[in-house]
Structures are given as structure tokens and as C-alpha cells.
Amino acid sequence: MATLFTKIIDGEIPGKFVWKDDTCVAFLVIDPITDGHTIVVPREEVDQWLDADQALLAHLTDVAQQIGLAQRATFDAPRVSLLTAGFEVPHLHLHVFPITGEADISFANAQRGQDPEVLDANAAKLKAALRDQGHGERVPD
Image (cartoon, rainbow, N blue to C red; front, side):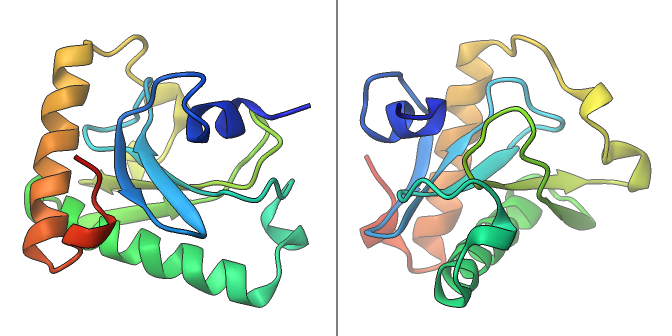
């Protein structure tokens, strides 16, 4: 049975995509810890990061870094967090989100039911920053 993330990747469930390539996608989280909170998800259904091969992990972290650079610039954050948890969906995903301090690194801080207009605005900002970084071919319209 397809995971929730596979359904989002396949377009069965809407997602606010900021990156798409042959190996992975990245989209905004609907209950973000901070504005711009994005997850990087492989197209292949891999349960957790320990089950992924090195090439896939390398690609996911490269994409996460590019998104993190865009987040740092867009949201004027001194740091960007990279986190793997994976209890909520059994499909490997990397959380990437701008932070101002270690207290921001908690799912207890998630903004439940963030306004879709805010998500759209944050996605547009990240897409623009990723295009400015030279990743236009991977940034969906």
C-alpha cells in the first residue's frame, strides 16, 4: 500500500512542492515547526534512513542543503535544522527548517493547520530563492 508521501508525490493528495527531480521531491509541511519547514522525500518508498543506500542518502542531503541555503536567505535564519524522525509516516524524509535557536527544534512547536495562503507564500519565496541559486530546472511551477 502506498504511503501518504507516495500519494502526495503521485498527485493523489495536494502538496506545496518546491523541488522535483528523478530521485526525490521536496514540499512544505502543512503543520510546520517554523515558516518554510520543508521535507525532502525520495520517490522510492524507503522506510527509514538506515535502510537507504549511500547514493540515495547523499542525494537527499545535497537537496536538503540547497533548500536549507534558500531557507536561510529567505527567512533570515541564523541556522537551518536537518532532522530525521519518521515515526509519523513510514517513508524516509528529511525535515529542513529555519531556526533561531535550539528551542525551535521540537515538534511541540508545530503550527497546527497553518493558513494555506501562508504556505503558498512561503513556497513561492523558497521557489524564487532556489531559482536564484540556479536550480530552476528542479523547481516546479
